[in-house]
Length: 424
Image 1 (cartoon, rainbow, N blue to C red):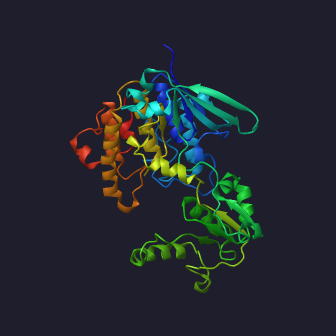
Image 2 (tube, rainbow, N blue to C red):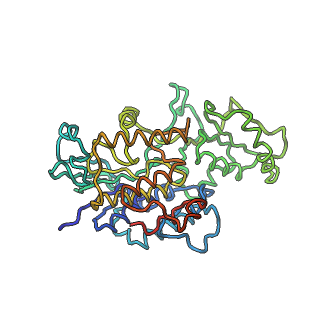
Image 3 (tube, rainbow, N blue to C red):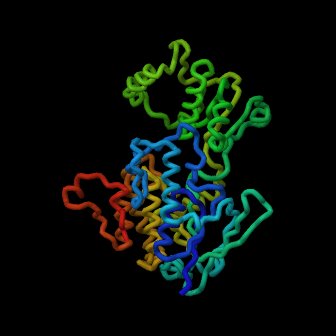
């Protein structure tokens, strides 16, 4: 019997995990990566970037960190080497097509009208079901270095692993004749800054007055680099929205800790030179934006109207999965569990229930997420309930959700990626 071909879009940590587990189940995966290297966002980071989760939680279950990595929060070079070692150990490079940007995917099979009439996912609840007929996906790729070079690949199943942090830089909109066209300095998105070499990035900000627009992870990292490079002589200014800012009492509680760090590292020379909460900024030499990725609002609205069972499947889109878009405390942890689940599903370990049951089950899952995430709830976010989520996946796969040895460990020891090693 011919092995089914699985198309995986993206060679970040999610795509690599999906590829590895597809191989384990006997499929023929092909990974399409627009960049010349693996790692996703880890392939283009700034010098000061480190893990924001402990290394013990940010790892693949079947590959421990090397013994020479003793830091709790490894730097980006150590993380990238760890990801490379994962790809080397499990022979993933031979399945990856680099510099292959996916510009389109098209489903060839039953019509949309027929699909909307199915009571079960893909017609019969199976990975390659399509209501008893053969359905395939056509993936069109473009060479990242030669835009006129395109190829079309036919696959039996598609796994999207593009994550939340890939795409086109989103530069804020400005009023006419009062935006970037009249600004005499240099405007650069954080994605472009991250793609620069460490030497070029340091030279760019040295001796410049920089304003960072946004307050995401990259914004704080870049602001810290600017402060380290220029000190108080050329201050860096951050501009960000304050609509959801914490209350004053929450800030005061941690003020002593913050001031101790400022004093210890001599972050300022004189109190008279420190400004907090400026609402106006004089002419600055550079702007670095960290606003995120541009998206089509109509598409996002259409997606969020549908419940997404198990955080990865759309009830009305057959033979397609999404891994790595749903956030959690450690995304690599959640992505690998999803990859395991998908590989079991592709291998026929279980069927999906009816669309109605899937929607009901997802509504129950959302209720739990809203209860524990409260106002921070987002539809595609596992967040702090990852253990419950893993229990659901284990139940589907027919695996024991209790991974510890003994009742004491089960009750009192924290769960982590290593607990799911050897899960088959």
